[in-house]
Image (cartoon, rainbow, N blue to C red):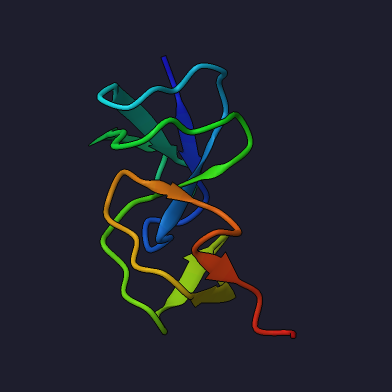
Length: 93
């Protein structure tokens, strides 16, 4: 079962594509560009459509999704944690 989708192997976040991702769950992520699967453990609950960190990120880091810059980290994020508006902000404002 595919739980997460990444477009590019260098993406720093993946998107949950199923309901009910809970902390402690071993997840399968599909990397679309490479058509391969990788595993990651959810460290927090991740709502469907939300992002999960694929690596540790520090304040000020640029977040890459779809192979492009989608914003900056404003609070530390550990691999497997929920990555959303509480810890990532757009650079537009």
